[in-house]
Image (cartoon, rainbow, N blue to C red):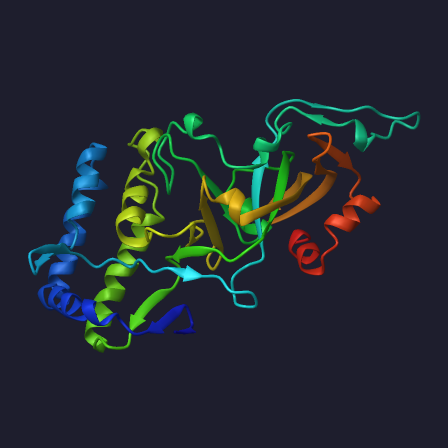
Length: 330
């Protein structure tokens, strides 16, 4: 397997070659375009039900081959290896929406150790939302299914959230603790044992599906189902059965990448490092200037978060890794 410019070159499994060739022989460029347009007419231009959206997605590009349905799935399983391009750190942003309490000293300087955040008090507050609290469709989950959404850069996490000037927010940092099996829809898989024309058809289908996966349905849809098409597309076309998460492109910044972990795998794959509470001082387009309010770390003996100045020895010790320090300063 070789990767060049977001294209992975590899060989297709022998038993799948005939099925792919049969599918692509029957899918002319004209037929591909007609299926795209039919899907958009049904699901995007006019509001409709999730059942109808899901039925349209499930029937996209299907053909019958050897008595079974076959469709152009772009699922593949990658196992991260130490030293490869897989990221070591992951980040997410949570806006501070509830109360913040703290004491000050005689010089009216606040004391970090006295801070209490209502938003983050327990160990579960820095992980995925509990499944029973997930009531809407998200990009990669249905109601009652939990996913931890992270980004590979703090700047990407900020782009993905609605943080405005003056807002207080948590920048939460995690570190991978072992190999991770994941799917990916950032890179296109080019099969060496298919023709250039066949791979071009696959690439057109891939781009269409990835664009629809990163699309939010129009505002004419209720917010509860605006991500239902994305969830159905990811499940059918991109996510392998044996993976713990998926890497996917950001919708807010070209070249930025996100990574989602299924709720039951995030804590097995990641170590929580700590979080930095920041204030958004200024934001111009995709660039922001932030100041640090305090750093928070979990005390496993006391089963609580403790807070420190970002200049403290504790913060320098935990956030002192050179790579992590560079990433969190951006």
